[in-house]
Amino acid sequence: MDINRYVFEIESLRIEKKINQDVFLKDIVSDRQYRRYLNQESVMTLDIFLKLLQRLDYDVSSFLTYIDQKQLEEQKPLLDIRSAIIDFDYNKAKALIHDVKKTPQSKEIDDMLRLYLKLIDFYEKLDLNKDSDNQKVSSFLKETNVLSSLQETYFSADKFSSINLLMNKIFNRVEPVHQKAFLDFYSDFIEGKKVVLDGDTLENIQMFYSYFCSATFGRSYISEEEAEKGGRYIKDAIQLTRETLMTYNLMALNYLNSSVCYLHKLNEDAKKTLFYALMSVIATGNHQGIFPSFKLAYGDVVSKENLIQDFKSELKRHLEHDTKYYEEAKEFNDLSTCAG
Amino acid sequence: MTYQHALVNYLENYRRSIHLTMDEFIHDITSSRSYYRYLNLEQHIPMDVLLKFTNRYQFDLKELLDFLNDQPNIDYYIARIIRMHRLHRMTFIDSYMNKISPYINETLRDALTQMLSNNNRIYMLEKFLNETDINSLINRYKKGKDTHVILEYLIEKGYTLIHHSDQKDLDTITLFLNDVRTYSNDRYLDYPTTLFLAHSGKDVTNNITQHVALHLFFNDEVSFKSYMKSLNELFQINIDSQFESIVQKAFE
Image (cartoon, rainbow over all chains, first blue to last red; front, side, top):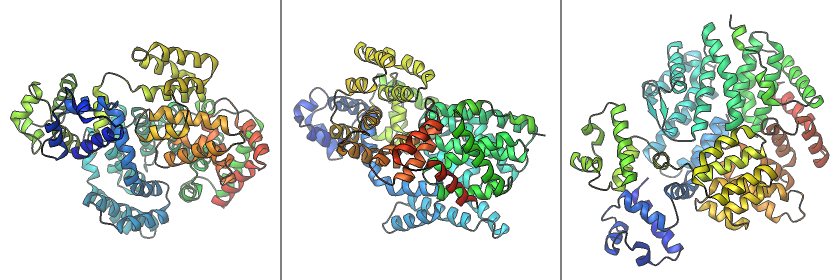
């Protein structure tokens, strides 16, 4: 954010509120100095900035929220692209990227769009050629420097979420040693060894747990101890959503839980969590985009006939009994029992 | 310079934690001489220098200044109290109340306590916002003021309007909430918005299906079974068969 934008917005708000300039500046800064700020000949101090905000009846938080609101309009196309990628809606993402690229963008945005296009290409051609998949994954790791950034201690919410997006898309294809690096990365947040500096604290905690669980169960081999820890954290993470209200996390957690339960023949819990996982996909409003990847993933652990049958019988159970999600979730089997 | 005192302390702690020398830390941002003067509170820190630090080390300025501020974000916590109250998740309300109690005036504290006993959230919100006109509130939201509480007010207001004959206000609220939720991480907003959209007659089947799916996770009071029954009757659709057909189509 450019300081000139702050000065410009302060002056616009003053005019909008029809506050006389002398009254506005009285005992804070001289007219002459204020004009120098407006003409970009001088830069206001934090102290003066805060005093002027107060005179406009703003505090830092509401002023920056106001600027965020105004900037949102400019950022909407990029946010739409990101959402489409997260929702697996790659055709929409490609069309949106094409639109954004029609106008010149900063280098940073250009780089991000290029990475998005590569991720889409990777996903669309996934499994057609294993060697090419592996090459693409290596190139993602190299290009984004993600592995070395996992070693850092402090992360902005933006950076943390970029790592999560990448991890989500390529995790199953990275080498076991790198999978372990992602797992340790999330574990460090839970244990307080790493910190996300901004964003909603509560939501950040939820994400640490959820991504840790995804990284645990997404690996090709996990030890009994890891399975136990992962199983415990899944239940913890589900209970955390009572406060964070993050439905996307519920979708991921229930999906993980049900796949592991199917894999280990814990069919009753598998059915229950399957129902919740599929309902949380419908709850996103984009089931058409998300279900194809679920179909692929569940294909490894349960037949489609059984899956449909299990969903129907669970739906029936919920229609016949007064069920409560968080109470049922508390009763899920401890996955440690099936780790062997 | 109280703010600056906390700020420079924060910067210095951060610098030490990432093991940078002072020269490395301030390189291309400011001179050593000026930095020492900020540290010693002999000179006010200019905003461009502060922004260079936030850009270089990827702090979010709002979060950083909020963090340095002792006072919790009242707007945020009041909104959380309202939301958790609506969701009947009372266990969280006490801790939110404790957080903000020392910083709110007696009138507001009384209004909150009253709301917890009489469940009249609209009254409490109107007292806090001191305004009821929907368009003015939307405008206030766009100005960055009381954004969290305004969202909760509009949700509450929307619920009171869904059976109202005049749909104009509900449409205004729905349109606004729909835009906010599209660009927000706050997925709870989908829950009331999909219901309001269905009541406004927009893409009823899809919105109600999504809404009922969200109900499973967002309502601890009315069971899925009874809620689905009441909405089936109200909207004259068979939501359970919708769920079956979505899953059938997706996995066949």
